[in-house]
Image (cartoon, rainbow, N blue to C red; front, side, top):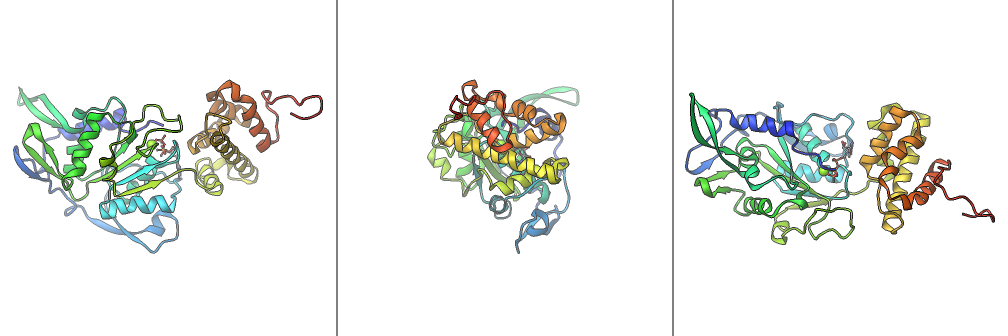
Length: 361
Ligand SMILES: Nc1ncnc2c1ncn2[C@@H]1O[C@H](COP(=O)(O)OP(=O)(O)OP(=O)(O)O)[C@@H](O)[C@H]1O
Ligand SMILES: [Mg+2]
């Protein structure tokens, strides 16, 4: 569930941030600073939504002609849900702040990433886990070597860097952000998107291609489900500043099957399609069972994909089910889960309760 600004990505951003400024990076040492990097100089192109996202639409959107090192890799197997994709496109094309909320593993973060990948839009993901601090976001004074001498220089954090260079920022696990970090974001969302670095006497104006997105499992009102430990209620003043909020929960079964088959192409045959249908049906039973209070673990679309991957490795449906999902569940719930398995696959796992003498379970 927690995958975002990984060590490599962080290192790449940092390397980039420590490069000497080019003439495109406007950096005055004080006062108001306007990032006039390059939506102007970067060539933009019109793209057909239908052609690049694969669902019917007459819309055209703007993207960049060239890829840069911060544009995410394209996942060819990605399947776009029209409603979510259009909301994200409004974020990119109309500079709307978009928050996507939903259960874990439903494709919130990857959806934004894959839209950016198709638009050639640079994007960085920042996972607001307990280790991301205000200093990571804003920056700090650091001692650097310049012409053999040690000098103190301000090293920008992720946020000023993205604002100056025109990248989209995705705050993942937004509802788990530390208070100091949340107030930096609030500051950014307040005054026309400008960021004031109080200790630097600088105001950073956002580049025209700077965008803000966030993903969260809860909607900022705390976690009533018990699934999302570590999340916090979000300041309602801040929630109010997201222009578009979309929910991305479980897709209809047929859509989920398509996604799994795209990710596990070796199952895309007659027999495999039947198996994937049963896998998705079982996932749906766990979701219903969770909603009814029968079990306490739900199978996310991510887990279904990982089950299909493990099946491709082990060639054994029950074993890969056990390794991917069942071993994460409470043992007291094994009989219920074994029953779901039997209903979908017709095979009895050893955990299935034995029928009583009268023939009934
Ligand atoms: N529509 C889709 N098409 C293809 N792959 C998908 C799709 N949705 C999700 N996935 C895959 O499922 C996995 C989980 O997606 P992702 O990390 O985006 O979920 P998330 O909703 O952000 O989860 P979390 O709340 O745990 O952060 C990823 O490997 C992603 O590539
Ligand atoms: Mg995510």
